[in-house]
Image (cartoon, rainbow, N blue to C red; front, side):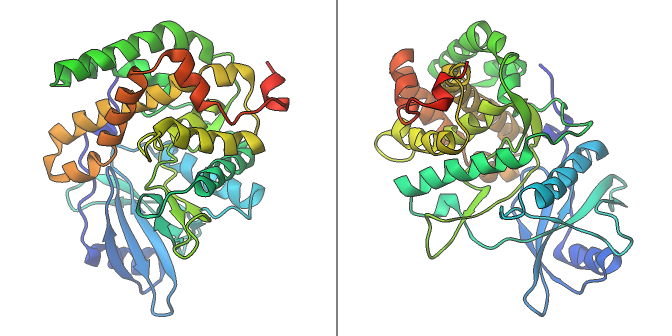
Length: 352
C-alpha cells in the first residue's frame, strides 16, 4: 500500500489571532479571522471592515510545494479560460507572490495562500432537486471544458483519492472491522483490478477537479438550484475525464429513495454539455464504485488515527457504505443502465 504522507501528518495548528497576524504581515490587510473545518490544512474565513471576504489557507506541512503550485496555477488558468465560472482566485501577497513559505511555531514549514471567498451554502445543506442535479452536471462539464489543455509538471502526481489509483488502497481493506463490509469491498476491489484498471489507459485524460462532493459545491441560498461556486481544488490531478463525473456522481447515491436515479440525473447533465464516449460510459459504474470504496477505506483509516477530527473525516462514510450496499444488490448491467439512463443517443454515444 502506498501511503500519502498527508494522511499521516497533523495539520497546522494556528489560532484566529495567528491568521490575523499573517494577513497583516504578508498581505497588508487588517482582517478578522474565523476558523473553518478542514481535513488536512488549516483554513480561515477572513473578513474586512468593508465586508470583503477572503480565504486564508495554511497548507499541510506534508504537501509538496509543487502540488500547492499546481492548485494555484489551475485556478489562475480558469481565471483566463473560463472567467464566468465561480471559482476562487489566488490573491497576491504584498510582494506579488501567490504562495509564501512560513515556519510554524512547531518548527515545520508550510505554504501560506490567500484566495477570494465565494458566498453560498454547501450543497449538503440545500434542498435537493432534479433541476439542481442537472445543473451540477452541466456546471462540472463546463469546468472540465475550462481545464482542457491545461498542463503542469506536478499534475501527474500520485493521489490516493484518484479513481484511477484505487488499487493502491488494497492494503487498507483488512482494517475494516465488519466481516460482511470487508468482504464486499474486497469483491469490488477485485473486479476493479481485473476489469476496470486495464481499460483506463485508453480513455480521455486531463487535469480534473476530482472532488466535486457535497461540501465543495456552494449553491445560491435563495435559489438552491443555482450553482454559486465550486471550491477546494486540493485534489486536482491528471486523470481520466470520466473519473470526474463518476467521482461527483458517487456523492449523489444516497439522495432519495432511488439512489442511482439521483446520480443519473447529474451524469445526464454532464453528458448534455460534454458528451461521454462509449468507452467512458462502459466504465462509469466501475469508477463510481471505486470512489465509494476509496471513501470507505481512507476515511475509516484516518478516523482511527485522528479521533479528535472523526466527525469531519467520516462525513461521507455512511453515504459511501450505503451506495456500495445498494449497488451490490443489483446486477452489473442493471446498475450501469440506471446510471446512464439520461445519456441519450447522439454524438457522445457514438464516439468510440
